[in-house]
Length: 168
Image (cartoon, rainbow, N blue to C red; front, side, top):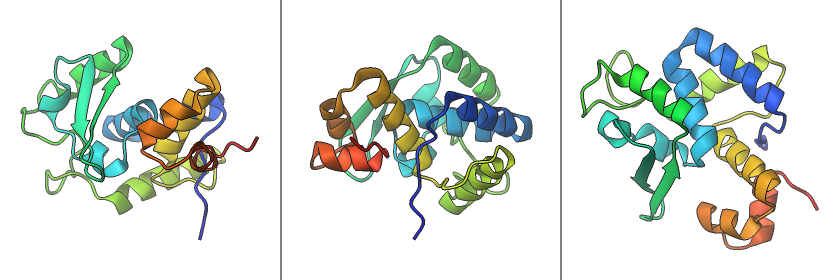
C-alpha cells in the first residue's frame, strides 16, 4: 500500500494550485481549503454554500468523531469563496459534481489530485495529502504537536508526527 505524504515545499504547493486553478476553480478551492483547514475529505465534501457564505470562520461537525471543528478563512480565501459561490444557492454543495449536483466522489478527488501532482513532479499523493499537508506546515510553524494531536483526534504525539511525515 502506498503511503501518502504531505506536500512539504511551499513552491510545490503553489505549482499544484496553479495547475488546479487552470483546470477548475472548484478543484483549486477544494485543495486550498483542504490544506488550510485540516478537515477530513468527507467533511470537506459535505460543505455547503450556506456553511461558508459571508463567514470568516467555518464550523463543521466531523463525520468520524461528531466533534465540532472550526477553522479560519484568510481574507483572500474568503474573497475567492465569495466569488466562486455568488451564483450558487445556499443549499448547494461547495464541491458539486457537474452531473449530479451532489458532492464529487472521493475517487474523483483522488484522480484530480493525482493527475495534477504528476504535472508538477509529485508522487505519493492521495486524498489524505490535504490533511497531512495542513498538519506538516502547522507543525513547522508552531512546533506544537499537542494541539495538532487534539485537532486530528489522535492517540499520541508520536502517531501525529508519523501521520504528517515528521521524523525526529
